[in-house]
Image: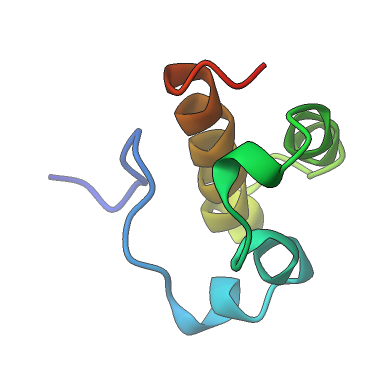
Length: 71
């Protein structure tokens, strides 16, 4: 398989573990996160390879909330 990111978020690297967007949500339950916030933040991230991990992480939060019926 290639070097890209899978649809579902994978084990974090050190760089994403220090990202302010990761730190913002890491200790919250999905149900406690306003669903609009990860969507808004995802829209503010530049779509480049440097940001691929945090894009994957925010997308994962959004998908998990949708699966749990949190909208």
